[in-house]
Image (cartoon, rainbow, N blue to C red):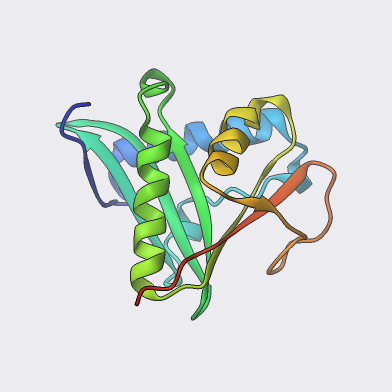
Length: 158
C-alpha cells in the first residue's frame, strides 16, 4: 500500500467537492430521496462534525466524517472511496482512522446508518467485519426499510 495521508479535509477543495457530489449522486441513484441521509458540504461544515480526506500525493482517494452525538457517542458519516480507488483497502483504513479518533475522544460507541440496497453490501460487510452489530435507529433516525443501523461498543482505554 502506498504512503497514504489521512488529514483534515478542506471542504472548499474542488477534489473534495467532486467526491462529495459523486457520493450524493450515488445515494440519490440507489435510495428514495426520503431515505438519503448523506450530508452535503454545508452539513459537513457543522461544528459537531470532523471531516477527513485520504490522499496519495495529489490524488484525493476518499473521505470520512465523525459526528459527535453526545460526549460518549459518535456517528460515522460520509465515508466514501473514489470509484477508481476501490478495492485497495481504503474503506478499512478510513474506518480504522475514525475508530481510533473516537477512542481518543473517549466515546463509548460509534454508530452509523447505511442503505439496505445491494449497492451498500460492500459497506455493510466492512462494518460487520469490523465488529459493528445491527441496532435500532439512533439519534434522529426512525425506522426505514431502506436503512440499516449499526453500532460498535468501543473498548475503554486503561
